[in-house]
Image (tube, rainbow, N blue to C red; front, top):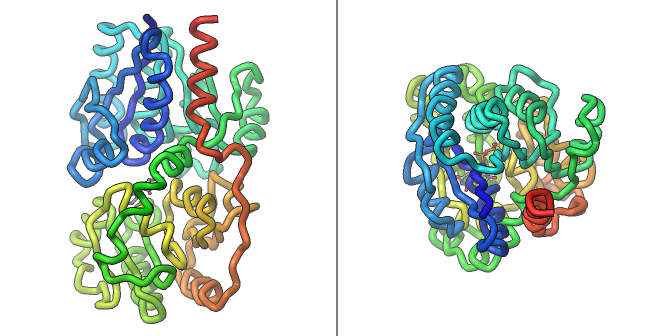
Length: 365
Ligand code: UDP
């Protein structure tokens, strides 16, 4: 029996590993797929609800590491994860995405000569000020299997001189979750519960440090959300990082009455809100992909994207960080200037099956 440990830490990781775990069940007599949760996101609304919504089993290992600076968090995950690897001696470690858990786990595994598979390899924003970019570049460098979601990833890895034999264009596991849970998403009651009209509201999410960590930026961002909410109802589920900063800077009273403020919401309800929105305004990575798949217009308030396919053929409008532009482009889109959008290659709900097949072949054949 071969043993594989997948490492998850933050909200997007749970969504990416759920379909992989499901696909490994095909080989459950030959491969034991275990899940290690580092604890980076730990509470009910950022963690537990995802395990429930995505029908994932309880993690086999829980490291309980949250908070602290990037260095403290990464180092503590490394210390605890090393103990697990020494005890369990898995045949492969799988790391998704670009969070601190991703680089911490892959670094420990690589030093113990345990092969590492990076799911969502090759994405690049080319902005090394983003902690996620540093995590991506370094994880790719020490991984043995690079599973790529979009063609830009193939080009980036090639340009970095990565050996072709490690690179696999498998598609997007985030979309696998969407496809797997579409019938649940269609049954969500969130639209009715919030008294929204289908296709007649805007969904907003913000959590990137560059947008929410400085008082001036966050204050301007809230002003723009208020301004947009004069045109359409805005639903704003607030990420804990953003919520903490709103409280720290005393900005909570600034949020206008026509904005529906929510805590972070579970996967099924969130995707229902996304699917039925007229427009999504965000700085998230994953949401750029989900809106492109769903054909929903998306404004990304960032200077760059590591997911360029969503702007090239999808419905994503990358507008930079001049927040007023978010208002202007929102108005244009609401007035009918919409991108038609196509679904990128291999975003077909079968990426995790392809990944599991490659892993199986390499472990057994
Ligand atoms: N998401 C959710 N509830 C929320 C906000 C987001 O379920 O309130 C989901 C959504 O599917 C999104 C994913 O969490 O794609 C990851 O979101 P996040 O923006 O936190 O991470 P990023 O993709 O920017 O790393």
